[in-house]
Length: 342
Image (cartoon, rainbow, N blue to C red; front, side, top):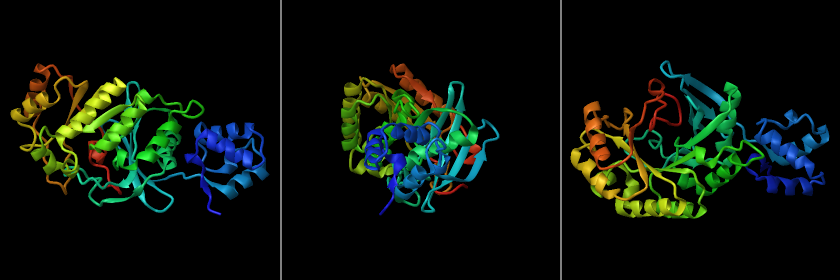
């Protein structure tokens, strides 16, 4: 019999499994707490359970934990990048960032990525497979154990497209926000998408109160299609219509990510058109000086050009920030994660 992925099970599912094993109801609470509060990696660590029960659990279930293959620490800002090894020998990367308010972890949702965005290292080798909910959770649990800290915010902006792994990501969100486990507030979670329009509509109906970050990167189809193949399926106007629906349904401000690439999408005309396209949208614009990846050939815009672009948007009434670079010396910045450290 194939063992079940216990870390991906909800409390109700675990309770039913425990009942079927002939164990009393309170055992489910103990096991769930060991998994999601104490974040153990083996059943032997569940010391308030009998040896017989621990063996029974080991016979029927598996805990998909991660091992740290490599850890790089930035000399400038203490950002830490992890190369995690999965149970099947595949690798993913995650990034731990320290802010005044606490710790944020940028997690991966897939091994690789199929989206093919021109400026991103994560997509260079394509996608291998989706991550299980347990494997997304384990990135958080492993980083917490390694650093002896509590992670208070999570961004699904690492390797992979979260909405391309929709069901597993939704299960992860249910587990990470459970008050019987880590109990991270949904408002402290950001999910980034390159623009899978049907899933944005589906996500809006759930009204989860997370922050939706949309990788826009261009104000028109011509430029965006040259940067992001997904735009050939769902164009800018179709994407923005879905975003407007999301903002109206959830009453949550959307964060539009805009990677500034020299000579491609950083002109005054692009800024003016972007302001026009986002008119009346409940949103924030996050300008990202593109993080250079040797294989892509993309060069970041200069500081003066970024400042001029930002000023145009601000004069039009938009809330604009320029993303601070963290971990750039260890290739841990946006768009630099891949299936192996460089």
